[in-house]
Length: 185
Image 1 (cartoon, rainbow, N blue to C red):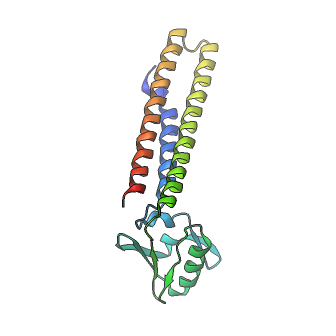
Image 2 (cartoon, rainbow, N blue to C red):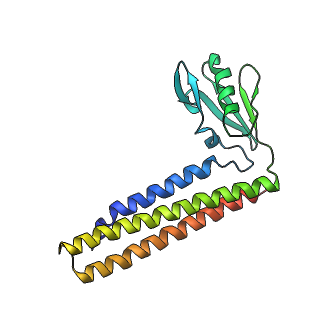
Image 3 (cartoon, rainbow, N blue to C red):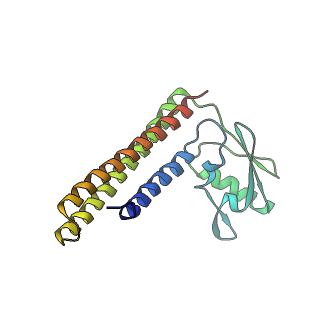
């Protein structure tokens, strides 16, 4: 078996990691990160539009996000969308820009966020294992149709297990790094 036989499965595993990293970006770690706004959409002339498509977002200091809409008429809509989201930060609107000041995280909030990060990690591990299972079912089907030999199947099993183990170790490292970031003061 060569690596191209596994490409579809490694692509799915890579996608799983990408999804997890996107979820991690939305977990705010006490410092300003524009990625927390990625999930928030604003009513812009009747169309749900991501904030980063109707405003510039800057980080003037480590705990502040500055949102400056290109069209000031949408300022109130952005403010309402942020208030309606589960961000937990009250936007400050001065008529030209919106400021989001990220408070220092309490110990309890850090623990809650760490639990959330662990859950995202566990969900990703389950997804990786499901991809391995699907791959093994596909290769067993090939064996049944005599497209591959018993030895090939054994090698595939070993390769898929190693691939799965590598991805799971990577997920654990990423979860650990995100958790460390949460506990930094």
